[in-house]
Length: 419
Image 1 (cartoon, one colour):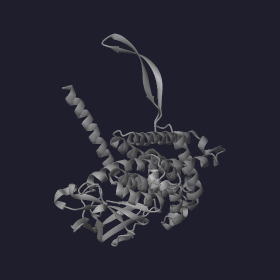
Image 2 (tube, one colour):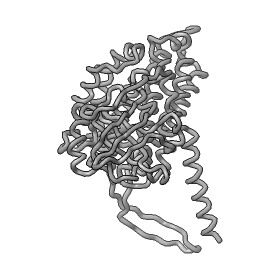
Image 3 (cartoon, one colour):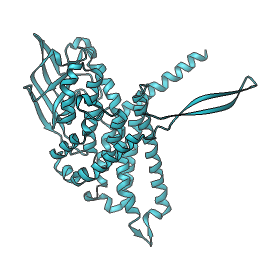
Image 4 (cartoon, helix red, strand yellow):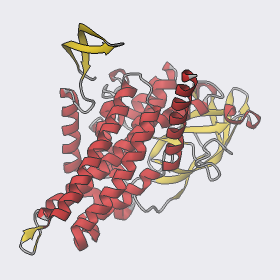
């Protein structure tokens, strides 16, 4: 949690020409980038894990387009798959901000592992925290914390940015629901056994007919993984088609209420965008981590590359932009944790961090020259991985549209108040 510093303040303010002197025991809020001892310990633990357990596997996983099964189990053992999950459900019992720190640190080494952990924590687990009943939490959260990967099934061939033009249907039969349809581009689908499925129960109601179902594929016939996508970046992270053929789901596995799927998805994605911002922040920092040492190892014309002024200006610029992105991401996460409105901040964080990631990774390759273009160095992988930040969990244009509405409404309100 953010630390509050109590400090006496003496101020002099002018009001209608009169000086008013007052003293107060004001509360000064610590910077959003300040970390508690627990947060620093987590950050270092994830950093150590990333360097020791993830880094040696990155290139092979990328080439094979496959997440190492042993690494997935190590993520569970380390507590990364249930960071916010309370200890009563066998989780790590930490905070949303802790999840953001872990996602960032993992992405500094491999954004594929980072997004697996991200989806598990900021989408799947959070839906159970925020919308499931106690019986559902007891049923699913321990599994998600200890052994089972989850995924969030929303996108369909005809519903991408228009996320709620769903064709997947759920039909009531007796006391059960039967789901038929298919989803595409589902992150974690290749490893998942727990599926949160958005399906329409009444097309005439539009988005109000969308309902969220929890499906345990190990116990429920009819869930089939289709095509696995051959992607530009985050290649070790599975992105698959998921097909539902007469999948019978009991009423007890409807999350929240029938018709509340739209609300669940919107709120989950708003939180998830902070996670994507953290992932992109890690991508940018990871590219710097690879490129900067090289600039002070390689000499040209008798000087280190990093000492040329033209190069100094470039890495100084990117360092500043990464810092700005970190402040946006951390501030959005702190506001969410504090229960404050954060949707605008989340949109800014995701949008800007994805832009910074793509620019920094591109620059890092240029700084390293021919060496940066080679796969075994790792810099070009960050460049490929960065591009997805402008696409998933709401494209950059969707984030701009969201921000534009906030700006418009704010100025419209001020204009009305001035009349």
